[in-house]
Length: 396
Image (cartoon, rainbow, N blue to C red; front, side, top):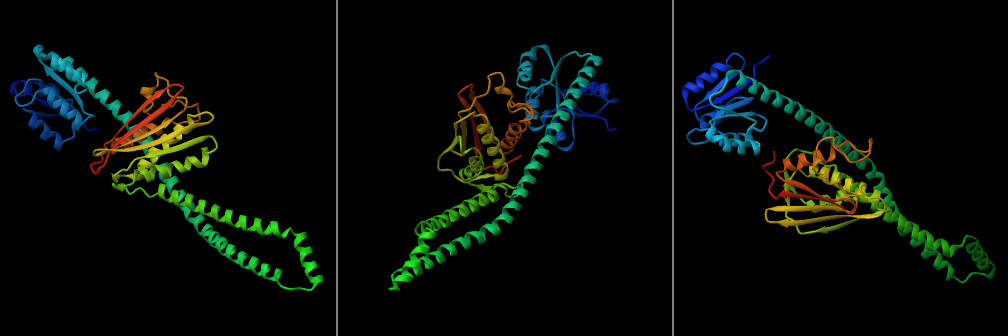
C-alpha cells in the first residue's frame, strides 16, 4: 500500500530537516523552503497533508494555507507557529484554512499524533464525499435514463398523433363539404312524399344537433391533438441529451417548459404563475439546470396542502440572472432550514423523499459558479433564489 504524502514547508533548513526526519519512515515526505516552492510541488504531486511554518518571507503560513484551501480543499493543513503568532493562526482556523496548529518548540510524539489525526479526518471526509458523489451519480444516471425514455416515448407517440391531427383537419374539411351538399339537396324542389321522407329521417337522427355536435367534436379533437403535440415538444425539450458542454440557453423557456409538467399534475389545486423578465442567453448546461428547476418546483407543489400558488420570477442583474421560485406551502421549520441542502436530509414522510433533490441541485448550481439560497417562514411558504452568471464557460 502506497504511503500517504506530507509536504513540509519552512524557511529554516535545520527545522526542515528535523521535521523531515520525524516523518520519513512513515510517510512520503516532500520539502519546500518557501510558499512559492510549496505551490510548485503541489502542482506536480499528490499531497495528503501540508505542515507549514507561520513566519516565512513573501507569504505567511496562514496565507499559504488559505490559498491551498481554495485550490486543494481536501488536503490536511497544519501550521507550526510561535506564541506571538497565535492570534493570526486562530483566525485562520476560524476561517477553515487550518485544521490544527502546534507551537514551537514541538514534541515529536505529539506532532506525529496530530498528523495522524488530521489524515484520519481527511480520509473520513473523502469517504463521505465519495458516498455523496456516488449517490449523485446514481441520481444523475436515473435522470438521464428517464430523459432517454421520455424522448423515446415522445418520438413513438409523435408519429400517430401527427397523422391523427392531420386526419382530423381533413375530416373537418370533408364534413363541411358534406354539410354543404346536404344543404343543397334541401333547397331542391322534391316531390312532397320524398321531401316528407327526408325530413322524417333528419328528425329521427336529430340532424340539426348532429351537424353542430360533430363539428364541435372535430374542433375539440384537433385542439386535443395540438395539446398532445405541445406536451411531446416539452418532453423533447426537457429530455435533451446532456452533452456535458455549456451552451447558450433561454432560462425563461426552460423554466416554462419544466413547469408545464407539474401543471398537468397539479392544475386542479395549484396555480403556477410566471413573472419573467427579459434575460440574456445564459451559457450553461441546460439539461442539468432543468433538473434543478424540476426538483424545486416539485418540492414547492408538494409543500402545498389544498389550494395554493407557486410563483416563478426571473430578472437580469448585471452579468448574472436571478431566479426566484416561491410557494404558499407549509414552510420549513427554523431548526431545519440550515439542513435542507444536506445529502439524505428530507422533511417529507418516510418513503416520500430521498433527501437527494436539493443536495444535487446545490451541486449543479455550484458547478455553474452560481449560488442558491432559501428563505422560509413556517405556515407562510418558502422562496428559493438562484443566481447564475450569464457566461458560465468556467464551469467545474
